[in-house]
Length: 362
Image (tube, rainbow, N blue to C red; front, side, top):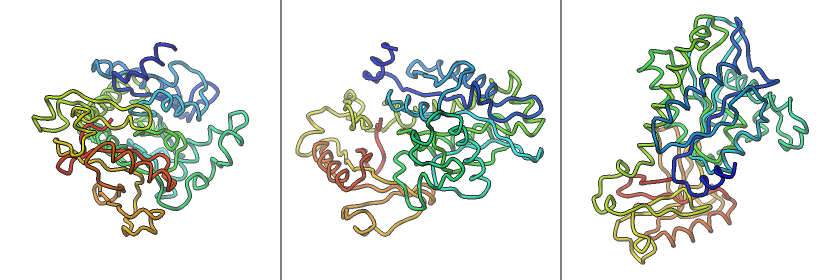
């Protein structure tokens, strides 16, 4: 355990938390002899094998055997290790034996009765835990809206979670010819409590005998794991690999500068002297990301607790991310961050742009 603690502080690698759903006294759903906790674990272990092909990825499991892990401990482990991604693996089911297909969930407002039922199902494990009423501070697993409320939420990593989910579902479709039921937003505790991009993958329906047979097979588990691993590696290359983060020669020539604690999410490939100087020579612009949501708000101070210098960025027209300020130095951005946090956006963080594109965010 000591080695993990040292590793998490050094952040030499890209940390992926793999969360095999259910386990121990919580079997998940079971149809036709297919048991969710077993399929989730076997697929997750296969996923680790494929991710280990990238030497820059460090995989950490919430469970590697048939044990019960309390729901709150799964994202807590990811947060304590400052992980870069949280991936939770599950299998779906309904009473109707006909539906089939994959789904990938990200944190968000419930979109339909069907999504709400899945939220209830996945969150219901809370009732198996001791002192769950105290641990989850009044959260009712049968009513996920009590967790988030019907308003725009501070979903720090929602946009990146959606991008990762898109890559995963795309691989299911194009590499495995599986039916995709799409990317969905729903209030799942395990995603809401993870302070990093996170997704919950429903591999398919065990209630559908044909799909359950595939997911229960060694070949199906290997194929699904490989498709997920490929998406994770592609995501890592897009957002974290220095060789592909941008095409500016000046930035490619310099090493990464890492920041600790609250500022760890920003890695800018420029000398520290340039970043903290009066005017950065690299034309890097820093902003504070503080909120994301599905509704586009007027950029009026009253909509953002009095913040005046707010800008918005749209992703596919359905997700809106809000930023404060536009600083030319990292030091100035840190002052902007303090202002935003004082307004109540306590988990806001600094992001960097060059020519309108995110660069080397970590």
